[in-house]
Image (cartoon, rainbow, N blue to C red; front, side, top):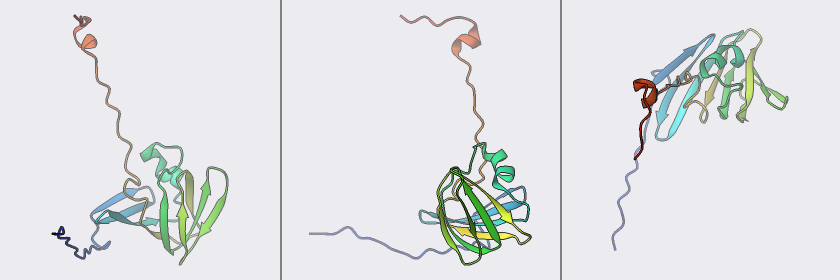
Length: 145
């Protein structure tokens, strides 16, 4: 009886030289993917608010990314669709489901490490491509036979 050989190896990347950087008004996310996990370091300047800085890019009513985060610095206030609110600060860990707005409280920048919601965070919404039908191109209906 033979067993399939499994190879396991360590993987290492650094957010100091990320795979990708996405910038937006008053903030940025730096991304590094290891295996199937994308780590994101989000930095938000005083005055940053998701609904003003990121919403225009993604074109959703609320942030649809679920987050599992560790807060390094600053104060971040989060308001869920149901109106419940929570403030996160240095040393806090949190789970934030999709359907929320968030903003920086005070004058200190917010830095968080996120391991669940950064894969598509702040990616501009895809433009819808409208294909013209064959009828529109030729002005004639196609006959089916």
